[in-house]
Image (cartoon, rainbow over all chains, first blue to last red; front, side, top):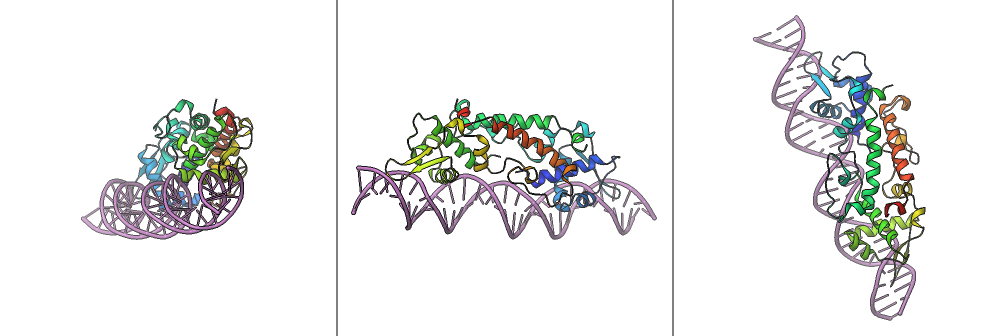
Length: 136
Length: 136
DNA sequence: TATTATCCTATCGATTTGATAGAGTATGCA
DNA sequence: TGCATACTCTATCAAATCGATAGGATAATA
């Protein structure tokens, strides 16, 4: 199941992408427009900024804004930042690989075999979608 | 992330499928072979039986066994039984559909648009894999 | 009738999740 | 300079979920 963090983060990003200009938008405005708890959204926007997707400005007239063009923001990156590994099992993860301690042989593991396919199919989707694609 | 319940369930199923005959296998034997907590596995096998994938026999010489041929057991069914909905968000679920309370319009929702593709790609994988495919 | 092995419910500690509170910090403007 | 604004950061919290365990009930076999 997708976490609310990811869901809210995606909504905030697509809201920012849907605006014509790249002026800073206040947390309160985003929260109100997307029906999200403002304080929770605050922490999400913070992680998006720290990971380089958003910029921020303090004080009057401040807020958050997209740093890159929506068509240059890949869903693979967004998902990894918000949701973590795309693979459902560490032993098939590209960026977060970890061996299963209980599994003697990956090559003959049914879980491994299935989850590898699932990971590839999800990856294909995320690689073919930019933020711009989602607001069309 | 895949739950251990699903992971263990898949391993148990593929172990049973890998055996030549369809004689009952004791929980203890499956647990030992797959390095799984026996008591935890017990509850998993119980749900697999209640959902119709496994049969069981009590008393001496008892245990669990596959009811159907491995090539007739689809991963869509297995995953729904063990892990629940295949969709990452209820609003794109085929079998567990639920409207998002915060989302005014599904058609214009970025999360909806993305998760629909992810669900379809996962579904394609699960539909093309039977239990027999995983033990080859 | 004794043994074997599944059936079932209840519970438990640890972790994660979603959310909130509040003080700190930098910016813009009068 | 001083004040209002809005992000920054840490700490906390209730609820839910997860993985695991315990123990008695039930059914089948010999």
